[in-house]
Image 1 (cartoon, one colour):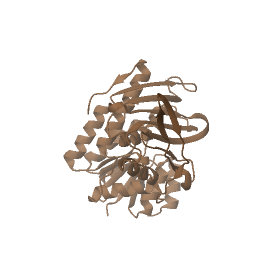
Image 2 (cartoon, one colour):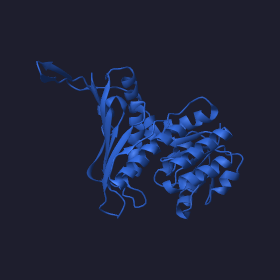
Image 3 (cartoon, helix red, strand yellow):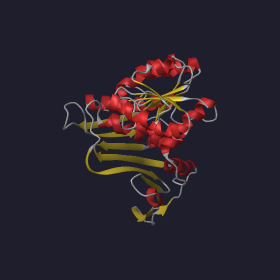
Image 4 (cartoon, rainbow, N blue to C red):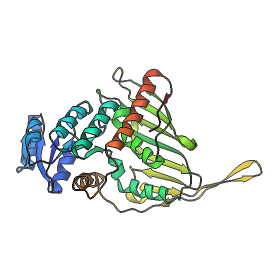
Length: 329
C-alpha cells in the first residue's frame, strides 16, 4: 500500500496523522514547530520527522502527501508535491485562486496523479445517507436548502469565516443540487479584526428555482451545524450536533389547498438510521482508494474548483456589495 506523509501537525493535522497511522501507511511528518515534532516523535517513534517538506518530496518511498497547513500555503505546496510525483490530499480550500486551482488540476492529470481536497462532510455517513434519500426521490423536487455553521471560535485573523467554515456547506449543497449556482449574493461583518469578516451570509440561486443560503459565524453563543433541505414532498434535517438517533430527521409535512388558501398538514419527525463511522477515517481511506484505483472520491480536484469558484464569487460579492453572476460550467 502507498506510504503517506503529512505536512502540518496543527489542530487538524494531528487527526490526519492519527488516521493514516491507524491505516498502517504513515511514513513521514513535516512540522516547523520543534515542540510539536517532539510530541509526534514520542507517539510515532517509527515515523520520519522533518522540519521542511523538501525531504518528504525527495523520498521515493513516499507516494502520497497530505497537506494540512494554513490555506495560503496550499497552492505552492500542492504544486511542489505534484512536481515531485506525489499524489496529494490537500485540506480545504484547494488554494486561494481559481486559475491556480485549474493549473494544479491540469498538472495532476498530466502526471497521472490523484489530487483530492478535504471536504470532510462528503464522507460523513449521515450525509451519505441523506444523499441516498434525495437521489431516491423521497423529498421530491428540491425547493431550498439552508446551512448554518455557527460557534464561538475558532477565531482566525488570516482568513474570514466564509473561507474557514463555508467550504463544508458549499460542498454539500453543490452535491445535493448536482449543479453550480448561476448567481450568488453575500454579505459579511467584521468586529474583531479589521477586514476579516466574523460572520457572513451567502445566498445561492440555481437553475429551476432552487435556492440556498449559508450562514457562518465564529461569534455565536452556541454551536450549531445544521443542514435543512426542503422538497415538494418532504423535508429533512441533518444536525451534526445531535446524537446518532436524532442526527437525521425526516419530516413528511404536506401543504395542500382549500380553495385559494394553503393548508399545512404536519407530521411527526422520523429518525433516519445510518451506519456509524468516522468521517475523517472514511476520507483517508478514500484517498488511498483513489491512489490504487479502487475508489473515486467525491472531493476530487474538479469538485474542489467548483467549491472555490463559489467561495470566490461570495467573497467578491461581499467586497463589491452586489450580486455576482457565475459562468456556466
